[in-house]
Image (tube, rainbow, N blue to C red; front, side, top):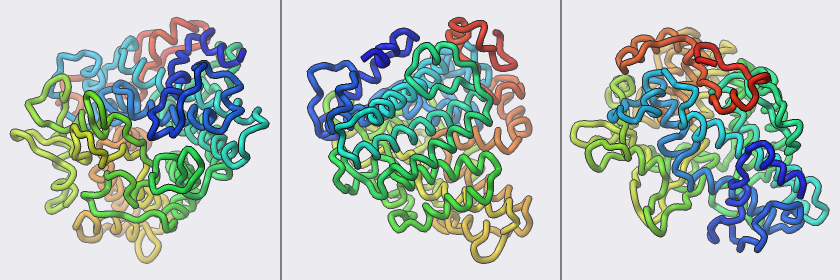
Length: 479
């Protein structure tokens, strides 16, 4: 019991640990135990051990104000920071600071929606991994699966933390004494740990989708081996390990479980393109919806604080004529265009889940990886992968013939394929060293002044104050 109570000693909310035992009956398929504290005994029982990890996924889709979906999500805040979204309602200062690339270290969206939520999930998954590993009573297959899920989710969270903030504390245990004094680890060390976690997760996770009772299912709401490969391919691409990125993305593309679907089906629940989805848990009771992103982005009335953004002119102008994605994934209300990948704003009928990884990204990862290895045209090339995605959108094959032209074509395709999904555009501009080229005019049009240091978000001031002798603020922000 001692280690799990230690979360309290470092100010890490234990509510996420509690929440995992309060999951809805349909998703968890288990009643919560009477004692809601996370004790080692929870990990001695298959049902309660699985419910703890399931609660992490539920929190990603149930909570209205965190990194996975909704107003404080990566999709929204990174979309505002880049050139994807226009902030129609600018009176909410904490949101407008992302839009004008001038985030205050005291910004509550940055603190609670991103930093704290991501670390809450990390601490929970560390607790799951330790608890499951120490258990001697769990069914072996379930134990292995939960170890893999914990490793994968930890890597998933650290991927976003290091891309948002650069150097961040690397917490790998629930030891409060150790965690209280952790310095910020540089990005290479963070990425090394992400790779190690994902490589291990691939050996632990199931090959096919399972329910919380370890039964095969068509619901794609738990990570599997291919999900770890999908993130690993992205990590390798970001680290310029192009042969490795090609290998991992190929393993997903060649997996018969996955295929590109019609554009109108790409965000439906459990479609064949999805590698991992987060299941909706708000499709009944009050305020019913399928995904929080659908509720947030879809304009059914004039923009308000509930629906304050619309698609930017930069995004709209990036589509080629006759690109079917614009017709399918951009909606229009009273002349305002809005992201419309999700079609359901409110409903008690579940037809959509939040898509986290999908196959189209893997084609674009492999295209870029092949291009950087000079596999530019012909069979099994950057062009062949790029044109699979373009053909689905009703476009002809690219005419690019050299590496730089192909690189530009791939970036353009990523812009119109992955918009408003998990911060892809913001991270692409940074990793490809294009932010200082693209963003000065964009930020000026948004009412701000671009600074190169805005590529990293500030460490929340509350964290700096807790550990003034350990943490220093990112450049460009007051310490």
